[in-house]
Length: 122
View 1 (tube, one colour):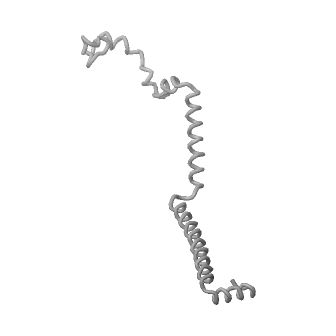
View 2: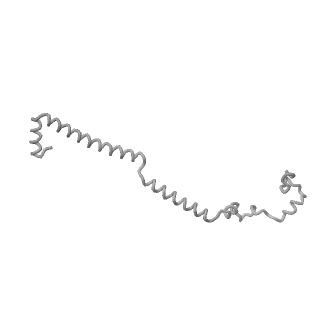
View 3: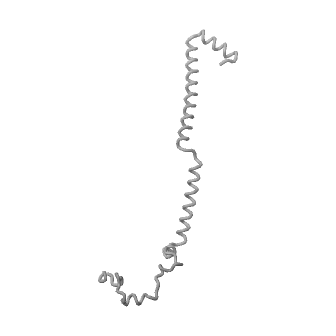
């Protein structure tokens, strides 16, 4: 290790000149007041932090918009009810049309239906 990396000392001897040089110096990371990630924080530009904050606000707004929408199950339930209503109306129209066709075929029944229509019955 000493040959490949001469500046790195692995288990230096007690009287080593390298230890004597660093005795009065304290590494910046060892100072209690120094935050360990401060150098990294300073390296990141302020606009990066602002962009990150803006994206977080946008995500919160998107989440709020999604939360205000009904659930998927509720959407399917509403669609089923609307479809059932449309089918019921169509079945009613088909039944009335079938009734009119039968009345045209049967003149007696047709006369009764015309009489009911004049009275206000449908």
